[in-house]
Image (tube, rainbow over all chains, first blue to last red; front, side, top):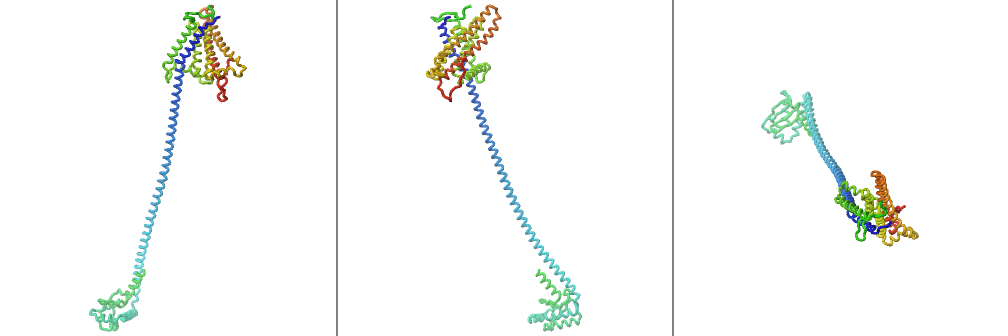
Length: 245
Length: 235
C-alpha cells in the first residue's frame, strides 16, 4: 500500500477551496437570510411592542380622560344641585316673603275690615239702640216729662249769655217752639209764657210739631237752635258712642 | 478487480498524478458550488419551499453545533457543514454508475483527516492563542501531555481509517456481489450503503466538531463564571 502524497495534498486543497466557496455561496447567504428574517421579525415584534405601548398609553389617556369627564360631570352635577338648591331656597324664601307680605296685608285688611265692621256694627247698634230708646221713650212722653223738659228749657235759656238772649229776643223772625206732639192751647200758653219770661222780652213765638223730638221742647230761629229733647240727647249719646268706637 | 488501495491515475499535470478520485472530487465541488449558487440566488424575507428547506438545513446544522459546543455556530458552520456535505455527496456518488466515491480512497480521507487536524490547531490557537493551545495538551494535568499529543494524532487517524474502511468496504462488497449475483441483487446493499454514507458523514462532522470544541475549551482562559460545560469526548 502506498499513499499518494500529491493526491492527498490536492484533495486537501480541493476541500479547502470547497469550504471557502460554499462559505461564500451557500452558508453565509442562507445564514444571512435567516438573520435578516430574524431581524425583520424582531423589528416587527418591536414595532408591535411599540404599537402595543402606544395603544396602552392611548388607552390610559382615554381612561384618564374618561375619569376626568366623570369627575367633571360629578362636579357639574354638584354645582347644578347646589345652584338648584340655592334657587329653590331663594324661590322658597321669596315665596315665603311674598306669602308673609300677603298674609300681613291680609291680616291688615282683615283688621281694617274688622275695625270698619266693628265700627259699622257699633254704629248700627247705636242707631238701633237710639231707635229702640226713641221708641221706648216715645211711650213716656207724659205731662211730667213735658214739665221736666219745660224746666230744662228754662234752665238752658238761663244758661245762655245775656247778649245771646238779647239777640234772640231782638230777632225779627219768628222763634219756633218745637214740640213732639201738638199741644193744647192751655199748654201752649203756658209754654209761651215760660219762654218769654226766661228770655226776658216779647218775642214772636210759633209752635211747630216735630215728632222726631220724641219728647222735649226746643227753640229754633234762623241762626239759633236750642236743643232740649230726647232726640237731641240720643243724638249726643250716639255721637259720643261713635266717637268712642 | 483492482485493489481498493490502488488509485487509478487518469493523467498527469507535471509531476502531479491526477487520479479518478481527484476528478470526481472536482466534479462534486462543481456540483455543490453551482447547485449552492443556483439555490441561493433569490433569497427573500418570504421564503419559498426551496429556501425554507435550505434554511432548515442550516438551522439544523447550527443547532447541532450549538448543542455540541455551546458556542455561536458561525465560526464553525462553514467548515463543519462543508465537511458533512462533501463527505455525504462523495459517499452517495457511488450511486452514479461508473463513479467510485472519493472517500473510498486513502488520499481523500487522509486529506480530510489532515484538514480536521489543522482545523483543531487553527481554532484552538484562535480561541486561546498559541499558549492556550499548547496548554490544552496539559489538560487535565501535565502528566497527560504525551498521551494528549498522541491522542491528537490517533483520533484523527481513527477518523480517517473509520471513514475509509466503511466507504471502501461498502464499495468493495457491492462490487463483489454485483460481479457474482447479477444486476438487482446489490440493491439492498446499495441502500444500506446510502445509510452508511449518511451516518459516516454525520459521524465525521460531529467528531471534527467535538475535537475543535475540545481544543477551544481546553485552550481558553479558565474562569469559574465563563467555563463552558464539558462536552462529549470520543469514546
